[in-house]
Structures are given as C-alpha cells and as structure tokens.
Amino acid sequence: MRKTTIELTEEQHFFLKEKALELQKQKQNASIVSIIRDLVEKDRQEWESKQKERQG
Image (cartoon, rainbow, N blue to C red; front, side):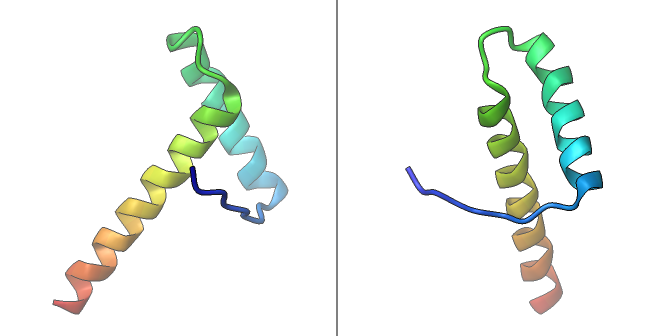
C-alpha cells in the first residue's frame, strides 16, 4: 500500500468528511478513512487524465 499525505483546507476537510459519511451509509462496513482515500485517488486519476488530454 502506498501512503500519501495531503494538506486540506478546513472547507476541503469538511466536504470530504461529509461526502465520506454519506457514502458510508451506503457501504455499511467501509471506514471513513478508506472512503476518503478512494475519493482522493479518484480525483487524482481524473486530474491526471485531464492533464494528458491537454498535452496531446
């Protein structure tokens, strides 16, 4: 497993936590940390995809 550290503003932290709580209700046994990790990873992949589109 790869460890990643990110810095969040209070707004970003609040948004991620609220989104994670919402998703946790749907996935009863998923932890908030794993859900946040998945959200961050998904956003990172989307960002990288957009960067590749712009380059070529």
